[in-house]
Length: 205
Image 1: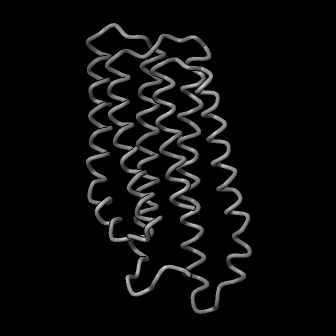
Image 2: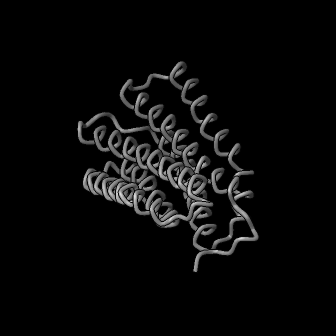
Image 3: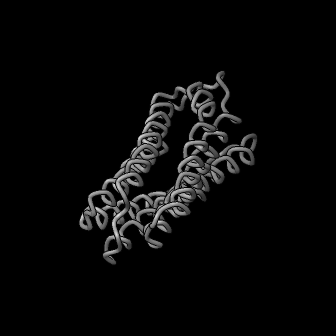
């Protein structure tokens, strides 16, 4: 489920930024439906929690149950961030607000490329059961945080120095702030696996 969620998350975030840049309302509306589908899939996993716990043996029930619950929490946080980003990008274009500037879109595309790489690496690690890759991904988390922080600082300077639209400035800051929350949720997911991973235990048959 994690590789599948990673693939969908990458697709949703990328579509939000591309749709915003091209002011493609149809694609942004379609993207909102993609988020809804992702949220429903995660809800299904939560609905399976009862049966998951019932099938665990006594030796592992507490640790495994808490692990499953925490992983679900991280997936839900990812979905909520994507839902917020898809909602505000759609709303901005639907209300015919002033388009983001060339530089704002360029900077968001830079972030989008970094997130595409992050989700692609997560997908690879989990689909191949290559959990050593998780450590490598976690080593690069600060670079992601710093990149978002840099874009926020650029926009602060830009807002002070240039004439800019209040609506698109608010949108830009909102996307970056929620992107930080999205990265944090993905990092939390990875850290959960990093803490629990045991190389002596093989993948499930």
